[in-house]
View (cartoon, helix red, strand yellow):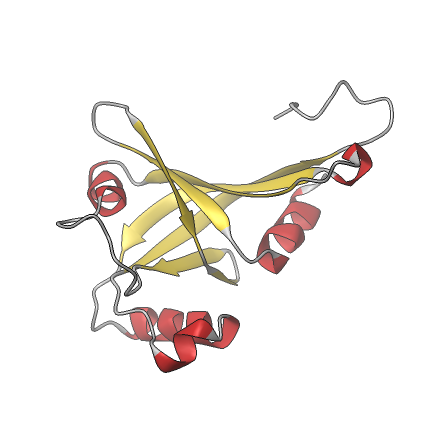
Length: 146
């Protein structure tokens, strides 16, 4: 799958997994909802209950801004399998910034659940430096080629 197709499938997806790493190198993976604007992926901390304190993903991003975000589609018919990934640099936005407000607007437009209860933030902006993906093709070596 070329980068344009990977970006398209990524942007059309409804949920993803955000991978960050602690300063020790320990990986951390969390599900997210997101909006894509150009080559920037926005996600925000929403009002759902969290495990308290500062979220690990935010601390990881502050220490190491290199992240990956993955979307995928599984089907028992393996001809339908695909994944798309964005690798990039993340930053936690200032809550009062215009970019943060625009991100919340984009997220609210994409997810009806946010209409009544927009995410309070903080907002994470991920500038994708690389879009990649894979789709099953008959005769391919199998689904793990990335």
